[in-house]
Length: 358
Image (cartoon, rainbow, N blue to C red; front, side, top):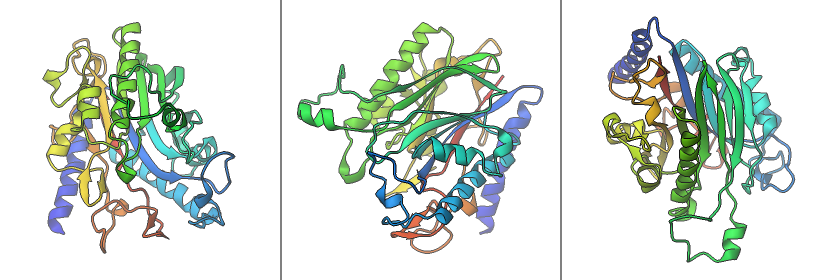
């Protein structure tokens, strides 16, 4: 126990030191959080949300929904207290609609952050989407778009799929938001790539990454010098082909070329860190990547900086209250449901974030 407390203290001090090193400089936090099925208690027409209704499998009542909102807001507030500032930009996934997003940003724990929302309804059959929160005094939104999943123009072989199967496939759109962070142009991509449930998605996740990468390079060519951040629940590790081959994710900063991305959580995965547990194994599916314009910086503009042990460029935010403390799942994220029962936890994912400084 003492060793664990010392480890937590060391991480907190390391993160605090990273901000302190930027004294006289400007630092902003950019992160991602899978909110694990943030549903309201009402049916959305055309969506398979029946288990999250009062008379559904999860008996999803207003009391449970209110508890879930409080828990999600408490984590966001805890990150603010750790960092001494609110996230400038926070991407989220597994949200049902605009209603739950409005309810979340208006929770008393985080209302003072005055988060604005970018959200599009996507064709996912369960009705879960991605979205972006941003602080309007720091980030000025210029454009946004929902990028659909398609099979057209892929270098991946989908010949085993019939046209009917392709036409009937539904998943989350990718969200892209372009704007000015303290006057510097950024493009933020928020994704939730196809699931691994039932052993599915081995080609679908690389295809999702292929779609993101193509659009990111188009934007980079259209706006030379733009800073690009790609984040999301990729349902893959940073070491998987979707992230290494199709997102051109590089482990080290000196490997990042003009059309590559730096993948800070790749080295953290190798060092034993995790943002979730899947089938008893540690993983980092909650990935953030940045383009070369946030790595190879010489003009004093925003650049990604180390924030953990002055070595790792990403952080997985993990606190005891967010972690199961006993039983079969001790040490894993304390989730909302366990074994089909409501246990009042937080999420089955830990949030991740990076810090950019100038």
